[in-house]
Image 1 (tube, one colour):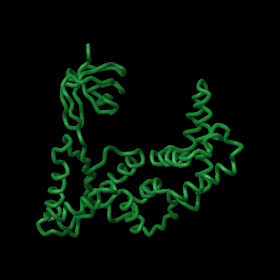
Image 2 (cartoon, one colour):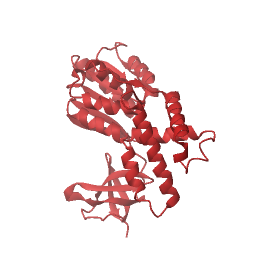
Image 3 (cartoon, one colour):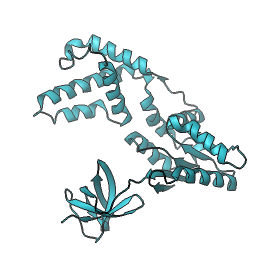
Image 4 (cartoon, helix red, strand yellow):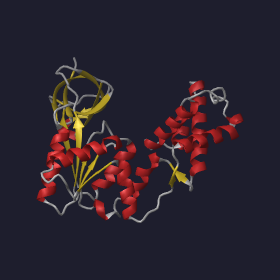
Length: 294
C-alpha cells in the first residue's frame, strides 16, 4: 500500500533503474508478482529490455502490460465478460446516425456536419470527455455558466446533447476503449492477481482522472506502486504562478510553470497566497521550493 516516485530529468536513466530493480526484486522474492505498466506502444520494447537485461534472459513473475491489457487480465480473473468494444469506425457510424436523425436540432453544427473531418473531431472530443471522466451532465452544467458568450454556449449545449445521445445509444450494448479502465476499477479488490503485487508505471507523461481513480483503488490492494516521474530542468530563478496557496504547515501548495502544475513549498516557511508570482530556488523530488518574487 505504498506509493513511491522514481524521479529524474529526461535521459538520466529512470527506466534502466526501474528495469534493474524489478529484475533484482523478482529474483530475490520469486513468489511475488511484479507488473510493469507502460503505454501500449512501449510494451514490446519494455519486454525486450527486461529479457535482455535479465541474467536468465527469461522470467515468470514479471508481466509487462498496458492499462488496457491489465484491465482485461482483471476481467478474466473475475470471470467478468465486458460488453463488446465499439471501435473507431463504429463510433463514427453511431455519431453519423445521431446527427442524421437529429439534424434539425443541431443548428450550431448544421453547417459543419457535412465538412470532411468533422466526425473525426467530434469523436476525438467525446472520447476525451470519456477518458477524463467528464459526463454529458457536467458539460450541461458548464454550458449554463456561459450565458455571456452566446456562440460558445450554443456550441457546448449541442455538444452535450450529442454526447448524451451517444451515451444512451451504446448503453447496455457497447462500450468504448476509454471506458474499460473505469470498469476495471470496480474489480480491483476482487482480483487475486493484484493483491500484494508490486507495480511499476513507466513512460507516462501524466495520468488522466480515470487513470488516477484506478491507481487510488489499486493502492488499497497492491504491496507497492512505483511511478517514474520526469522532472523538468528547472533553473534557479525561474518564475511561476501560485495556483493553490502555499502553506508549509498544512503541507499544501501548487505552482504552475510553463503550463505544468507542481507541488510547492515556501523556502522561508511563509504562507504565499494564490495568484502570487514566485521564483524556484530548489527542487526536492517532485516538489518545488519557491520564494515570492518581490
